[in-house]
Length: 413
Image 1 (tube, helix red, strand yellow):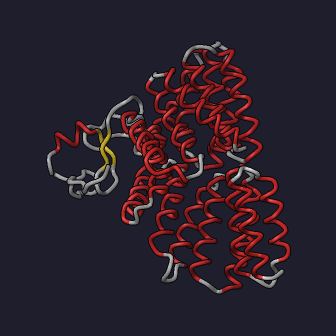
Image 2 (image 1 turned 30 degrees about the vertical axis):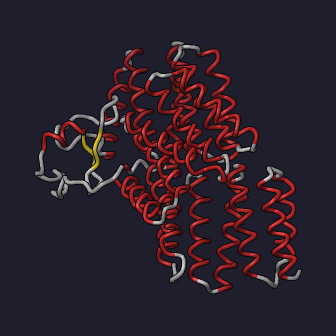
Image 3 (image 1 turned 180 degrees about the vertical axis):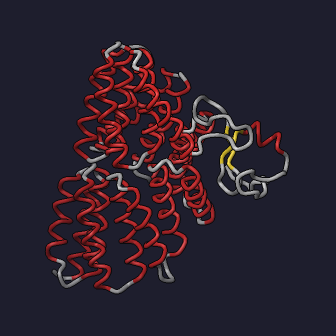
C-alpha cells in the first residue's frame, strides 16, 4: 500500500470517527494496518488511532493489544520519541484495566525514553496518567504530586484540553478525601474550560466534566443538580457509544437514588453499571458498585447480602491495590458485625480499619484527626502532604511536620 493511500486511509478514518461513524472508522483503520507492512511510520500512526478509539469505546483489552504492537513498531523504527509515545499508550491501557503498578512503570519508561522533540507536550499527559494510577492505588500524596506536575505542563504549554482532564482528576482526588469544595471547584473549572475553549473539542470533555460535577453535587447532597449534570453526561455518552462513561453515570445515578432512600431505583442501576464494568474490565469501578450495593442491603437490613457484596469487593480491591476501598469494606463490615453482635469479627475489622488509616496516612499531621471522614477543607503543602486548611492557617510558617519543608505554597489553583 503506497504512502499516499495509507495517509488517505488514516485521514478517511479520522473523518468517519469525528462524524461518530465509529464502526466504519475502525474498519478503515484496520485495513490500513493490515496493508502498511512496509511503512512503519504510518503503521505507528494508525495504531495510535486504533488505541484512542478502543479506549473511548471501553474496549480496553483491544487497546492493550494494539499498544503492545505499537511498542514493537516503535522499537523497529528506533525513534526514542515514538517509543516514548508508545509507552504512554501502554501506560494508559494498563490504567484503564486498573493495573496501576504497571501504569506507573510504563509512565517512567515514557519519560526515560524521550528524545529531543516531544518534551513537555507529552510529559503533561504522562504525569496525568501517573497521577491517575497513584490515585487508583490510594497513594494520595504521590497522586497530587503527579497531577500538579501535569497541571504545570498544561499551564506552561497553554494546553487547555490537558488542563481540563487534570482538573477532572483533581476533582476525583478531593472527592475521595471529602474536601467537597475542591471536589466541586475543579470539575466546574474543567466545565468552564470546555465552555470557553472547547467548541472544536470532542464532546467527551463536556461529558467528562459534567460527570465529575455530578459526583461532587451528589456528595454535597445537592441531588437535583447532581441528577441534571449526570443526565447531561449520560446523554453524550449514549450518543457516542462511550461505554466507560455510561458505566460511571449509571453508578452515579444509583448513588443518587440510594442517597434519596429510593433503593428500588438504585438497585437496577447498580446492576446495569456492574454489567458494563465487568464487560470493559474496570475493576475499580466494579468495587464502587459492590460498595453501593452493600449499602443498599444494609439499609434493607439484609446483612448476609451486604457481606457477600463486601467480600467480593474486598477481593477485587485487594487485587487492584486500592487501599481506600479496603478501608471502606472494613468500615461497612464493622457496622454490620456491631449490629449482629459478633464481637470477634467486629474486633477484626476495627483493627484492620485502623491499620488502613495508618497505611494511608489519612490523618492530619498537625491535629492528628482523620482526613476523609467528613467534609472539611484541606490544604496541600509544596511537598504534597495534605492537612486540614484550618490547621495550616494556624501553623504559620513553621513548616511541614512530616518533612519540615516550608508551608508557603507557590501559586496553584
